[in-house]
Length: 607
Figure 1 (cartoon, rainbow, N blue to C red):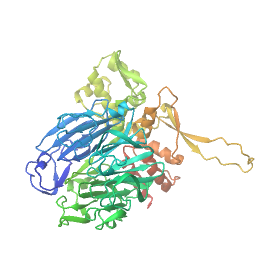
Figure 2: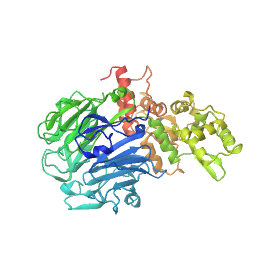
Figure 3: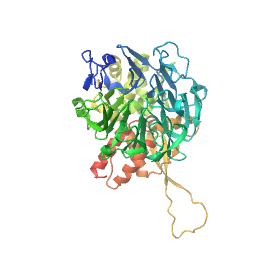
């Protein structure tokens, strides 16, 4: 694709639109308007704050920050850090990395909502590490923020919170004022949710499989059946935690989407999508037949995107490009027409993304190539490298199987041609390895020189694509160095003695490359990071209780990015089991995997 912008926005008249849109668009944006952002193929996520500013994550570890008056700042985390997610409150942004660290971007000239460190008069000049978690030896898995507070899921299931406890939004009781450093809330927490402009949050526990909420509840937006603020976590009515896809809030209402794609609302009647005041989450009739997959909430409006890339919106008027919004508040969900640019991507694996500012909406594409993103994480971590290339004293650890499958040369041949017969420099080596691991051509001249030395055709042909090479690696059973053990149910022979002697458990082994598991699965990445490499980590037992057929298909998907069934496999069972396994194994490309499962559903006419 060209580098033309694929980011569109819409909203009311504000001067700050100038910094994100062409100069001519200074008035209201009644229609989706193309931004002046370039190279938007690299955009991973956009988050918004107040006063009007936006943080753009450009994968893998670059950030751009836009303020009013056309100010733009660029940041880059250290090379050994890879961004996992970015979140915002009204005045503060937090960045969590794959290494379990947290970084902050804050403006001390405004109200310090999450004062994790002593920021100077920086006006967002510098990204700063939040040292608290490292000092306490806490690995941060995920972060969410609401207006004035931050929530941190650490070491797998330990919940910490910091910032304002106004209305009880930290869930630690009736403590007044701020908690400048994160305080422990409870353990056994597996998911956390919040809304940027809300004063409450939600979480799910593994112990009870229930959804809890606390904080501001004047309109009944906690979904607990009352309108009193909650200073300690309280059970949300009528939902199991395992049923929930996402929850988010504004200061007035909350929206919940379950894993079936059903959309529920509660709270203020003009913003909850129901048109009537509700103190418990209630199914929104207009979206009853739709499967929602994304949710974004501003201060007084909501966007919902369906699996068919249909966009619905409701709430405060002046934000949406449609004639249907002819009132100050549009109480019920209304379908919003997408810009023509996006119609070309409705059937592709590139995911349409939505994001909301306080009074502003973004529409953009996440160009999916998660295989290369995953292998970039592997390259930067240097985990499970089994050989080195380079000259003495300047050697780089690499993965032998990956290097050989991409070049069709042996490691010895590469070492001789590049570092014995010729001695290429560090920059040329790095350029070569970027192509090997994630198909990036960062310096075309240096990469071409390396290809010539290796007597390879440049530019790489279609037979040298990352996807095809990794798919071929799947067939190489001899080089696989790890096994997933799947328990096989023991069937007792009728003629055997029915005594109390414990029967030996039987397992079937699924061979796989350890570095592929590390690259493709967040679950295995966390497991391998915690386990000492000197310990025996050549096998692990699977605890998903899924069939051996489903897990074999999932492992093959790690290599091929596609799901294919044989005639003797039960498509309904495979779809059901893989839908759960995708979340359990924490795949980065969950959307692509779900797209593959949707194809299976259509192929076999599954409801």
